[in-house]
Length: 480
Image (tube, rainbow, N blue to C red; front, side, top):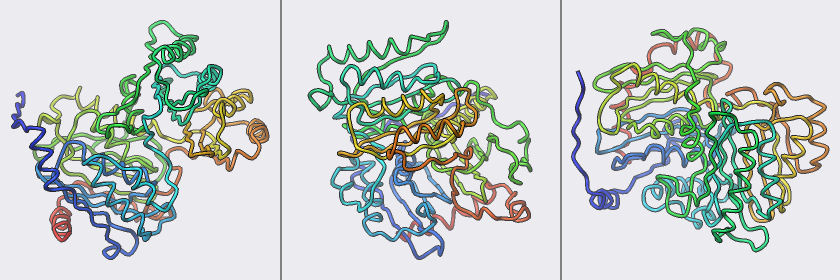
């Protein structure tokens, strides 16, 4: 039987007034847990608020070891267990103040430059001001693609101020921010924009295959949910990859049949496990995979892109294994009724998790910002027979920083001699070259030395644990 859900129409002005009257209340608690800091959030519920909060913590490169989420539809309560990269609690007063302000401002106008300047630490730029011209590029991936694009931009006098590129399942998505290399500032002249787009079209179509729908879009990015003048690049990349249909060939592990994949919990299964079933009027989604940074951000991003609302959730990690369980409905109030709907969600979650999986050797650079820098770096990588699978570069005044994941042209292990040649040619620009180890590029909470017996004890359903946590969660947040 088809499920029909009715929801009242809420005037946007009234909704905005409710937010102003009841702004998010954020408590950063260092007393309740001896090992981590608890970030407790209590606020009026609004579609997308969970992603906004997770985004704030992810942009600070904080480790989220546990999360408890509960909503009654009108009110939202959340607790994040977080540490810094070294496993320490958050004690820096400027960082704590920034978290409080950023979570509140994410719903009321965005993170200001003043807030960022008050934070007494270096934060990798995730939002890029749309004072620069943004180019979104999607299409078929091939070795040397980023090198070709950056070379063309340099040749026509465009200075790359920031760029992020992802590749996944033979698809590539990039967001590149430019300044006019001759006059500085954004590229405003429509004729100049058209010239840049024509050159990028030529690059993308040079190896065009029959049936391929490569696209080049030139525009000032104003991502949905972001304040005017700012765009969150990684959220936009998820949207671009989804639009390219990279999820269509993504499959979860078929050894997850009802209970658990013992191989996963014993540290041997490297694949992603997704199970979906009906539960108390919700669709319950269970995700298990190798833990890694920003895993929570990526899964929540996928759910929002598919217009799901998260009513309750719990997430955590045991050793190197992460488990997340979400109780969701569609934005229109419906649950997942057909196997086709459930299969599509499984594919999209696997894709969102896989896009950021670390592959190859990670090269980190820090050097003097100059015209054509991205072209120089990517050219050296290409000329030494290596291919870039993921890249991120930004500029901060006179300094440029970036990270590049490289493999051989077939996606395999890098030749040590080729890597040595790249490091030598780039000189002091390379500050580190570290092998990426699949999805688990760093520890994300929990003991990595946990025994098999300890992991087996964790094999009771995280969903059953969740309902017993809700009353304690609500009590904790009411004390804010």
